[in-house]
Image 1 (cartoon, rainbow, N blue to C red):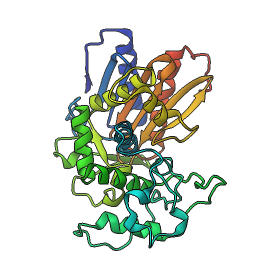
Image 2 (cartoon, rainbow, N blue to C red):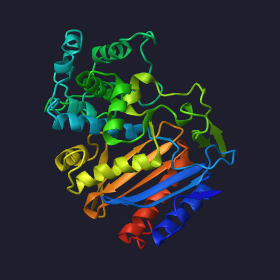
Image 3 (cartoon, rainbow, N blue to C red):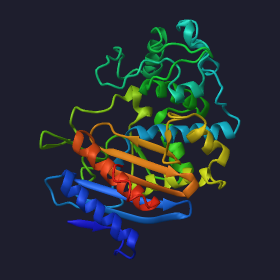
Length: 364
């Protein structure tokens, strides 16, 4: 049964609500939420669907959705603020923060910096495929994260070095474990403390882990494949390893995620906010392609920044177009299989076409 944030007050509301309804039927997605905004605020918020595919419990705007690798951009905002406050620099070497680890580390890592880690240009083993073995470390050990980092730094680099001394880009979840460790050390806390810190700073609800571990009445994650839908119980053994949690294990409500995106959009359009415009531009556009926890590109002359993530059972995406003061988000409680990806692409292309009057570009 459709659930909408407003009463279809304008054409944007009706258009987005119609898209979501069609996408759910076409691709069999349990629930979808879309927000569209500019730097002043939200222009439309629409949602449709259920918390579990085989129930009639409608989702609400107070429900949490797992944001996957969008967590990387949250960590980048924390880092950006610490840089602005002079507590870190993007050029701070990892071993300036953890000098005690340098002696046993491979010498190739000697100059890796906070920025290298965010760019995935530090040569750190990826831990992205799900098939990589983690070292055996006592799950109760207080030094568990540090033991994992020492293990990583004793391995030979997983990528080749470039002429400037950094490594060729290799997307690495484990790289964010090291970046988070630097931030944790500066803030004198652990990763949970970092999340609590940024949640309070931004006045947004941010939680670690799957939504339904916060309460069984929250949305459950789903995998779609071979014409089957599998839902994941809160006690299901599938979970993100805690050792790489900073790379992708956060959940937010759709409105809180949208506000996080609007914060970034505001900075990118020159507004002073939680971060200075220069910091926002650094995070999103200092490098082409993959930047500091986000990606960017150009489509038909339009420069955009993109954040997306999925840990397999949810999907979350934001597209920001600073020159047009425009952004939108898509969140859904299904995160794997061609149906989910096709649904995201289907929604994205239609929102973008409408915004930029690209209906003639039938091939998009």
